[in-house]
Image (cartoon, rainbow, N blue to C red; front, side, top):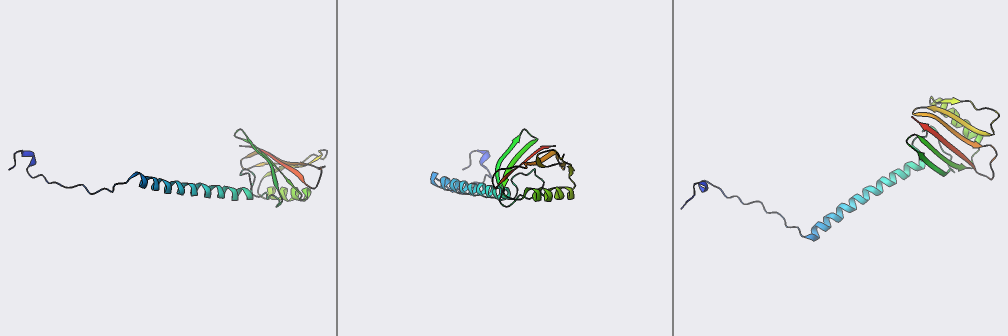
Length: 155
């Protein structure tokens, strides 16, 4: 017999069964998630490394191609706008700087002429988010390799 009016017409519906997960199952799931995240991080690092072999500094104009034997010596960012890096190479500097000057001019960068009395080979340029930049090396370098330095102030 029904004694309470609230029970009239009430339907009992059982909740769907939920799987019971013990600590081991959670650990297994956590391990799979951890492995997936680790794989993702490794693939991102690999992408950055591949890009770095092409041009280690994103601010350097893409038209400038480093010599195949370039060994990066220094890479620095000072504040939010000053960038510097240097590398050594055995490539003929006069030819390399000539190619770079022509490439920069063809891409619309403004090249400033160098004074003849300077004892260095240099390219000074600006344009495309670069307020001013200089690529330089000393004419008289010792040994087979020469160090080329890039420095720039970005906009």
